[in-house]
Image (cartoon, rainbow, N blue to C red):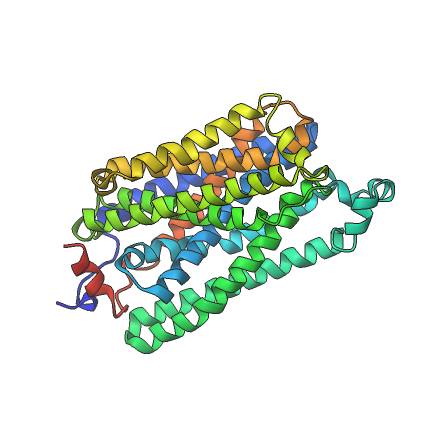
Length: 398
């Protein structure tokens, strides 16, 4: 039986559960962001700081999922076929994220010292970077990033939907042809995004590894998210009859690889700055290794790398859905912690601190994002029925 002849649409039971959870996500997200909005009247700086790192996380999940889909188009493999619709649905949340960028643009005076003419005039290093770090150019670059990301996502999703209708290898080849340049654009745009939105919160500091950290982090976040959703959907058809321990094993091996890549880039940045011992570079790490932030760094070493690395070495764990999901959720939580560690110390003056908005902002953005994601997930079959490699991917799991 061919993959096209089988119905891979959401089962009625799954559609019913999604209809139940979708408004809950929206209500939770709207209420949490409303609370943050009230907090913004009293402490606007804290609101924008909490919003920035939370927003960066969800942008990373959407972009990482888009990159995973393009990677699968280029390289093939059963691992990507079974999570392709999850990744495509996540990539279609980019228009929502473009709208949600408005608070970041509004909060530039509270987030970025380089936007203050007095600070620029008093600091030679910042004045030297002002050609790049200025408000109009910052906004133009952000608009360019979103235009490129949404164009790629639109073309990928349009051709993927057309492939469902007509099938064949011609559309698969077209998806491959756009995925190569798309991955190049993703790599460069995310690198500049990391510099613009996060690294420039401390305009005197720089790192040539910073963009690579974000690329690895996005890949890790998106794959952990895709695994979590896949395992949740295994409770219903069609995934109940499709996903096997062998598919999970493949995804677990790739997750292990991304954990190691993130750890390698993180250690490389630290080693380069430590060995260089330059006055303009080391303060960034000094701020993050004192005043309580050193315990956050230790937690990242233990729970973002060491524990997932050791657990994912186990073949049995990678084939066990509940255990693999637990590791994936742990990684997602630590991705949030990592972004908090990257962003918050620049505003805390060397002392560890947590605001209630540091919890409300990710919950609010997460609620809205999951609401829109579930809307997109229900629009297409859970497997790409026109993909010429679908049947091969299904047989691989048996």
